[in-house]
Image 1: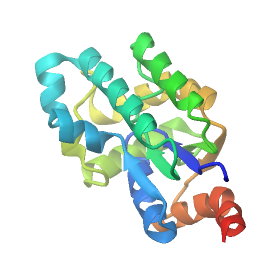
Image 2 (image 1 turned 120 degrees about the vertical axis):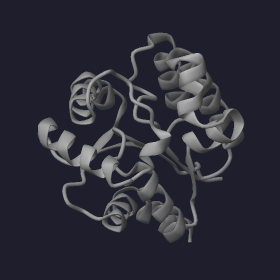
Image 3 (image 1 turned 120 degrees about the horizontal axis):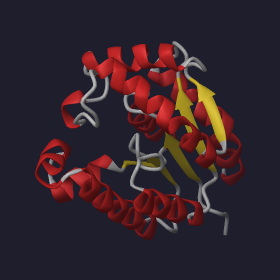
Length: 198
């Protein structure tokens, strides 16, 4: 029996993890789960959770969702899209638990998506995407008292080393469209494995 294909997509808000994951699902038939989806289904909209209970409680239930996804998908191929802070947020206990759960899942690849090496440029791109509704800004409450551009840049600087430590590979998405990003992931990580099973 061949080992299940397990691809984890990570990176900052609005980088396109969910969009690329859904396109990969359409093109390959592999199941895609954005961890925000079961969380919202079970607990309600993220802004309301954060407003009522705070960020630390949100991170606690996020860890429950990560654990549930891993437990219920042990025997099947899957692509998992993480939240922007899942393996990089400031609540050490829950961050480390997420990392441990996901690493013990034995992923085929943990792919960091980021537009460019320049974080100032990245902040501008990601903020522009959030303002245009690229990935549902209404579902993503602010994490600081900073303005959108300043917050995005601040979080990139604060979280990027966590992303690098967790990931096994990095793809600079640059000006690529969603379909092109999906194709790059398929070509790099999935084509050979799927062909071997055919």
